[in-house]
Every structure is written in structure tokens, then in C-alpha cells.
Image (tube, rainbow, N blue to C red; front, side, top):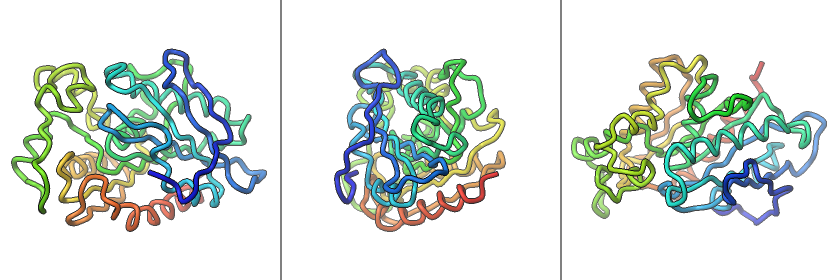
Length: 284
């Protein structure tokens, strides 16, 4: 994602010291106010294997103009460290920012995670593990979020190939991605073929944490029906599981849209920003 104009971050900080990739860029609102700024945690995609913190900034300018801060987070990729490293990283980043919210006049009571694909997955993981003690957290960190925007992220690795077989994409395009094979993004992420490590795969699935989450944050989910990398049914089953356990969910399915389609920016981003503004205005 590239913003309408490239803005320098207010600060680039290391939120941990295990890797040079555990850094984030913090952008503060264009016009400073006395009231603390709500925060969007921007999480880049890239099949868990590539991408960086400067690739998820399409909505940066508008968010900053609306009084929001944005923290664009880099995390360890699968070529450097396998699961649960990336999940731990983004949770450490949230905890780091919340613990220092007064330093930058951030609102510790309203952090929203926003990502697509692998970044959507990580955003969902932040949401569904909010308020839970998990293997991902440091005891001293408050890594929960108050809203999640997940565009076409995987939610159950073990079902992806079955979903493609049972409900293929509804348009033209290349062959669908095979996820059960050794070279798939998810297998690299876990360190081995996902179907050969089902317990580890279930531990990595956002959908597994929903029943035990004490208070699920609101979710805004979006996917395209011609996604040939992540089956759109991954979004649908996440939507169903969240609703079943009492979460407020906005769901946008874009007919014919592919993975990473520009239609998401044109048709969904304005609604997401309105949704965030409304949630923040309604906060207790």
C-alpha cells in the first residue's frame, strides 16, 4: 500500500531486541490535539515471507487528517523465524506502544489492528487473543485491541484446500494456490507441511481462540469471491464463528474481486474509516 503522499514517520522505534525487524514507524496526527489519539496498528501482508512496514499505508493520510495515529509494524518473516514469532512480535508492538502511550499522547483505550492477507491474519490474532493468557504474550504486556480490520486473511489453515475444491473462485485467473504442500506460505510459516502438524496448525488458527476470548472486539471483514490465493470461505467461517460468540461484525464480500484487488481500496476503505470513527465515538 502506498499513501497518497509519502510522509516521514514521527519516530522509528524498536519494540523488541531479538531482531532488526522488530521495529515500527509511528505517525502522529497532522493536527495535534489535547485529547489522546486513537491508534491504528497497520500490519503488512506478504504470505508471511515478504513485505515491510512501508507497504500498508494506503489510508495513512486520511487517518492522520482525521486525528488518528498510525503505527506501521514490521515483524519477523517466516524465513527468519517460524510461528509463533510473528504473532508474538505484533503483540509485543501493541504492548510497547500502550505502555508508552503518554509519551506520544496515544489513547491506550482504543487500538485498532488493520491488515490484509497475512497482515489480516495477524490483525485477527490480535483480536481473538485479547484478554487471554496465551503463548504469545509477555506477562507484563497489554496487547489487546479494541477493533480489527481483516481483509482476506486466513483463519483456519487446515481447511483452505478443501474450501477451494468445494467452492472454487467464481472468475477467471491462474490456478488456485495449494496450501497443504511443503512449499506453501502456511507450511513455511509453521516450519513444516500443515497437514502433518495439525495440532500446531490449530494453535496458529485465529478461529481456535474465539470460544475462549472473554470479550471479542468488533471486526470488519472483507474478501473477494475470485480470490485464488486465500479462499473467500476463510473469511466466511471467521465471520460465522465470531457472530456465534457474540462479536459485532461487518462483512463485505466483493463479487469477482481477487486477492489484493484495488476494489478493496476504492469500495471498502471509506467504509472502514467511517466504522472506526463511529466505534471510537461510541467508546465508554
